[in-house]
Length: 391
Image 1 (cartoon, one colour):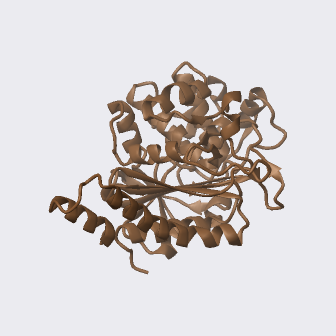
Image 2 (cartoon, helix red, strand yellow):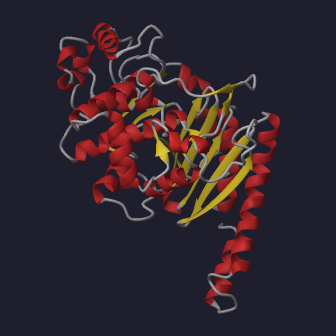
Image 3 (cartoon, helix red, strand yellow):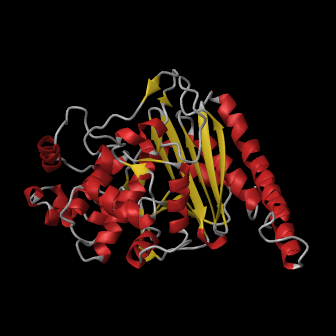
């Protein structure tokens, strides 16, 4: 059941015992949630020696922010809801949203083949790879990373032209930056703009995200957290080929919980953008414990923690896993746990939300640490703020 403190406050307000906007109610609310969040986050920060962690929680459309530590060990600036973190592969969900938006506008279709949009790839393996395959990691075995020797677009297209799949498209899920990256390239082309402009000048403003960037401006560098690698050396993301499309976004806790809220249909945004978000929650393949949406991954709710950990284990990112096509596709589910992880060498991120329950969470940190710890913390927090799933 919903946490007793929140319901007590609402009940007392309805009875006229306290004002709905009472500072006492607000403070009690905050203190209760903060205790839940801190109990889950403090051990992680200590165990992995993480300089700073930001947690944003959304409950019934209301946002709560809890910050721990510093954005930089050198400057000692405290983490805040406006601190910029690298969100790593959560960036892929924005690429998928942009592609979904382009489909609504008739600029592409997920059923299109890749070579239909890139004529120089005609006659290659991409004649049989759809845009849906790119958005679900089922292209046939594209690698996790763009090969190191590729440094420009011409080399990248030559690589794609010569690529030979290990599997038939739609039969295996192989997590891949070149896969979603190629979708981003095609989407921007279909919109007759650069990918960076499509995200920063179109999608972010439509979502009400005013403090998110692919390229952080000089004026915002003061808010950009310093990342730290496993040896605690300062690092930031390397802007390589397809970085923008696959892992290059920097965002704040305030903006990321805004994005989570938009995915839960909280707040008012352009109806086409809202539909694009909803469409990314459709399920196309079942692979292991997870249902693969358009980049987002989902599970039935409530679900056991062990199942979420199984779906987020390293093998799902680093190995090929059989993919079973869902036909017809699973319509967007509201009673689902929908999540995505993100990592760079110096940052770690996790976002999860349950549309039917109108609760969601974003956890951002300026040091990479195990995904299992992120998932467990989010599960503990959301479980106590809503229904506690079976253990």
